[in-house]
Image (cartoon, rainbow, N blue to C red; front, side, top):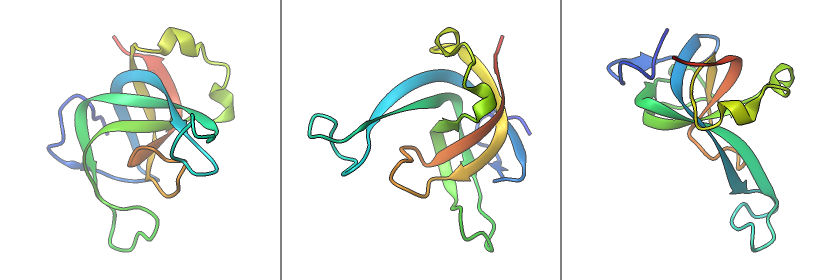
Length: 127
């Protein structure tokens, strides 16, 4: 299923469904442990890759889903980068239009700084 191009006219699904999202890849630094409030106040900086979507997406959780929740009109998605992507030329992808394929999940702990995460299976520059 492709999104990020046609808007949020319909709902995407959580894993195991695969989705394709298009947007601009940016690096963000958030306050991490112990308080998740302020880097200058002593919290550890957490660097994350955030996909800024071209069009907002909505994802509906099944009523039986105890892990995920429905998200409306999300404009940012955290990329979960698996080990096979650790050596991608990230600097060449930053602030560029990219196409990412993978599976979605909703945020579930303080390390998640967007409502949605995408476990990336494929990352490439988009035309």
